[in-house]
Length: 216
Length: 143
Image (cartoon, rainbow over all chains, first blue to last red; front, side):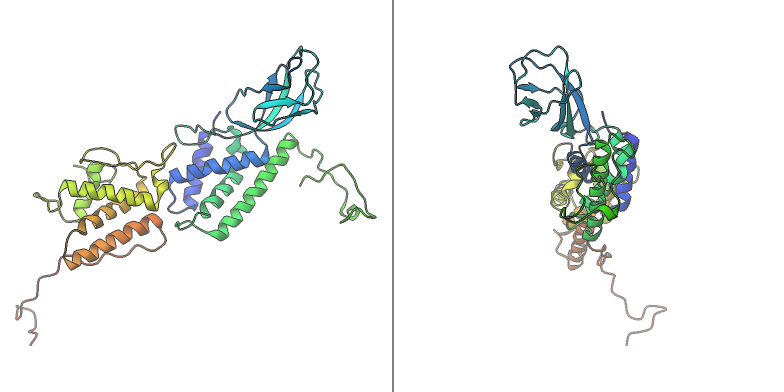
């Protein structure tokens, strides 16, 4: 699993064009931080991991089949597809249940986790991340890269004003990726909301609804 | 011999000798002194722009002991800055006023090109022109 090499090359070229005097090695180092923030705050890199619970045990190690570092548990389902609401992940990579299963599971359960990049990096000094990262979100990653590079001080490409602009766009991009991941990239899923006239600043005398939530 | 592209130690030193007008043996600036200037310039470059020396998992500044075909792992866009840095450091040992000025300008340009905050300073100084003789043919007398 690695970034699309053509997209990565394009991204580095775009960054160097806009950052006069920046080194390629410096841009790659900053890209690592940008992608780490992108994945940590968007939860858009997920993996479903199977495990087999046993009676009496409350902790189960999750073995990732792909690269990346587990950072969050998004949910656990048993072999019938029912969500297990008493699962949590205090230790990264270990699912813990409040109540131990009464008997050995006859089939695998599934834990869905969110992941982020980690070391090692590739021989080209690029982070190891899913190939769709730059194919889908290269514009937002470029914004993050430019924002962080321009925030460096005493460089030919230092620019506080443009840094703030690009970082704001980057945070918007993270939010877009987060919402898309939550909706499994399904257009229009739960996106409706009550018209403006129904909303109220407070719940006193106004309309209060638990669902749906306005996502964007 | 191909023109210096400043990619290897040998090419960098040949480029610096061109700037120093020191291409004919016996050299005014020894190989050892220029290698020392190269190493010092690389260390100074590390202070100004550590990202130039980023390796896979850290920062590594190369150091050299002899002129060879060893590649200097610096991106092409920064090689001219290091050539100026080496030349400036080599000129520092001279005690001529004009060389001091050239040394200062070379070193200032080295820093400016790496940090990029100020424009590059035009070179000044150099070998003084011979004094004009009075009453040469075609020239008016100064009296």
